[in-house]
Image 1 (tube, rainbow, N blue to C red):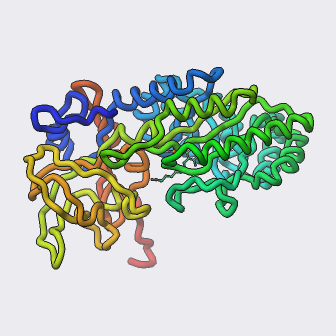
Image 2 (tube, rainbow, N blue to C red):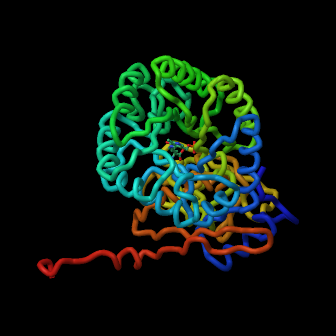
Image 3 (cartoon, protein in one colour):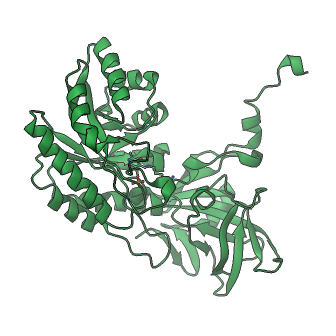
Length: 420
Ligand code: LLP
């Protein structure tokens, strides 16, 4: 459920007509709904209510806007970060350092040292090499880094290949078959407080079965490690729960996910940690766009050319992802169209041969489910700027990220004097 609904024939974000935001701020613009974020946070938390004090860390990569993080921080969420930049955002939004988990396969020396200095809650170590380096840095500072070892359970998440992370051939985690050996090595090192395991097998999972298979493997590993005398107090089960992108999509609910987790982990005796991203932020945002013109098709449907492009919302070009497209003021008429952006490549296509609300030049439309992996994956390709972001709260709204104009980007470039 989200708060982008038709009211008197016009699409609103909570109590604000989207047309007003387009008028005031211009298009394209990302619009987030605070009530939707809060609702998703509450639903996720309630789904885990059968667990003992779970730690829920919002995956910042899905939407790192400071206002979004702040809303979730106020809901009691921590932050899952994958770079020094994300860590700084989490701290700036008021997330307590101990509620931050640092994941990621390529943490640099500087990032690890900075995270230790900040006192973050947990590092999810992705390789023995990274573990060695982190132990050394921490020992040098007289610290013991709180860590979980991320294992790669070799489970097919059944999702798009580019967002699957738990197969043996993926770069993430250590092979589960070597986990006992690596755990023993790392946990014996000064500078290391290796206290648990982490797993994350992919994103936009549409079935619970791969999660369950992965979690069962982790559960067996917890027992094996304990039998070898290790103390395991924390297990991070990652994120990955999918969301409906198409009207009519049916996905496992957070409640079903929570029940499965409670059943599978009932005898683990650990504090469970979670890193949800998309399920919290995905349907809490839309990308609002205006139709530039409608061009007659060659031998197919017309091209509806909108002012948003693949640089603003990369998912369709990258993953052939589907985003529902709806008119802000639907006339009731329908059309079959190709919906495209202005960028000079064919990949800049949001929908092919799709039945949508009829649109003409000047009309406003939204791409739905754009709150996750939307603005954050933007680029300035074709010397386009970065889209503004707005958050709605009841009948008010605020710009939570300024539009960055192409000339502001150019201002950071230099022509060396030897080229003058
Ligand atoms: N934890 C880790 C270690 C992750 O790698 C990810 C996502 C998450 C948590 C959050 O997963 P979520 O709950 O959002 O599924 N750009 C792609 C998605 C990439 C996901 C990367 N990792 C897309 O637009 O579909």
